[in-house]
Image (cartoon, rainbow, N blue to C red; front, side):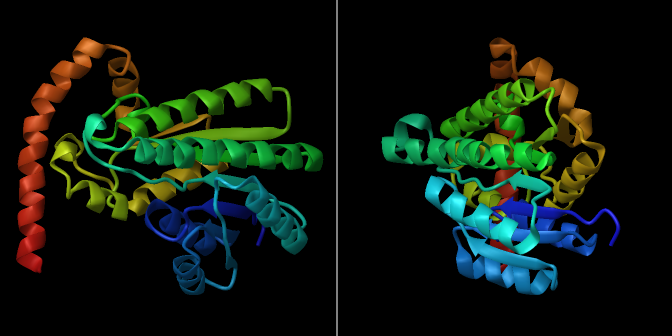
Length: 272
């Protein structure tokens, strides 16, 4: 197929990653799922089509990254797009979350993407093209109670992404960073179990498919930044730099979120 790309998607075994895998495969791209959950990744690969394969990857391992990238180049002779999507969340108010869990969040959500970029970028520069896509979050601008270290990691990812993009501004690698709002994924289901996360449910979550479509449009258009929904981009940028405004916003929305979270739990209980 014309304009068929080779894409490597981390965290492609579920949620946004799996939706992006399926949508990219349906568009004719060759997709490699890289996920620590090897069995789930294989299941997605089998269901997504013959142009999808999977590899086990610990994104925090430099050695594992080298092995996976070597395999991609051996199988396809190139990589066109790297999508750093894998992420985890340990919910709870910051003082109630162990240091080990805070560290796990930072290592996975920030350092995993850092290692990925630093291992892949030299190969992109050598081949003369490539596109790095980092899936951040609107929490990069709006730090949320209940996921303090997740917000911190996404904030750090935004800064690192743009710093590297600026360093490489005269090169041949494209950079896109994506900021989804709350999305109906297993991670959101996990957050729904914690009262500390009520604020996350004040708005209406988007679907993984909506995020996947926006990611692929961003790749096609070589967008610098992608906000999902796009209409919230200006708001989160302006509000995120005003601490007092954030406190006022959260005071209002936490009440709304708590009620919506209660209703969500009641719907799930009724279906059980």
